Length: 529
Image (cartoon, rainbow, N blue to C red):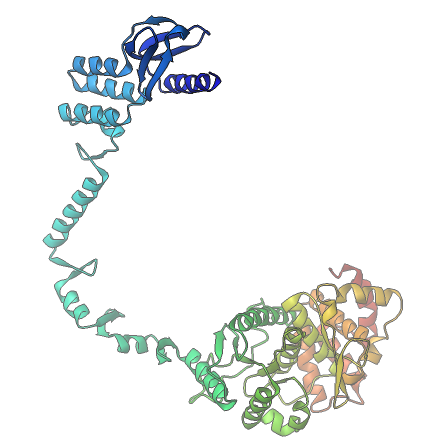
């Protein structure tokens, strides 16, 4: 009995939810049910609802009040409807009472009687086209037909979805394209745009040159074709994963922008690239081929072969006889012909930091593009600022310190790699605390040290002094470097280091080695984090 009560309740609620109307059956327990009584005897009362037929025990039924069903009410309303407004009103009643199919039918009857009946048309989803109510599809078709008639009246024809003249269609069917208001074969147009075909793709001539170089180097080391990423200032390629090549390319551009800013540029590269010529290995030398190359290899064999190829092109390696030393390294950078950094990209090492650091050395030398040598503190400061500009931290220093971290010693130069400090090390805070604790030597002592003799805190001081000079005058670092380049010539360490720096600092910022020390310390608290 309890189960039957549950069924009665569900049916009753469903009937009310649907808004149904029929006979009202009042039960002895106080409940009521709406439906049509189709059978009644001493044992059962059978009731038909819109949701099914149920049998009620006769002794549980208290009373039955006859009433029309909702279907009968609909039939009466439909029979009484004569005008478009009548059927639109009936359609609204159908919608409110759950007659989904009948709702649409009644609106359609309204439109059949009055094609301009707005309420019925909108309910059916029709739209206006001029004075007519039509389906959206019909309106679109009418618009297309009107456009077709208008275009044909102009003498145009349809070709691959576009309206063109008959002359244009003839050219297009022959495979011609229009460039600078002239019709020409596709390949001729591509060449007129300054493009060439490389590996089946049409690319800028400069990009094709770097692709050819990348393919040539890959062939030299016996590897499949390398991936290549071209950016504004860099051609980055190698045998490592393409995602890493893309990341290095992005970081290199960030480093380039930072160093360009240090030299007084706007970050676009104009200051750091001001005197860089087109690459001499293009015939003739082409503007735009002065991009720096970054090559990322996966093993020592590829590294050595890439180094050998660089020796053939670079006067720098031949002149300075560095090849033997570089063979024992995992990274090298040269300025000629237009700058190249090659690195063994070993997972789990700080090779990204090493690339950006070495890139900074190349950018410092490339800035003036001469055979002269910069004082070590300056080139190392630029190198460290390059990594900082790319990553926001420093992991690589050419330093005399050999802490617990790994390091190598090549030709008296010691490179410290500290991957553990990525994301934690902050040179700005370090130099502030170092100066405050009196741990830094005077600037005049720093300028007399060789690259392998610099301590990390001294490198940081050099970075800080460059930031200080730039803060006073954005062009001062550029002026300082150019003057020192002329004064130092081919000497890494000069007997006249102090007088050279007094001269250069006076020209760049109206300081000497003593006053720059004093003013730097005054300014240091304002150095950001």
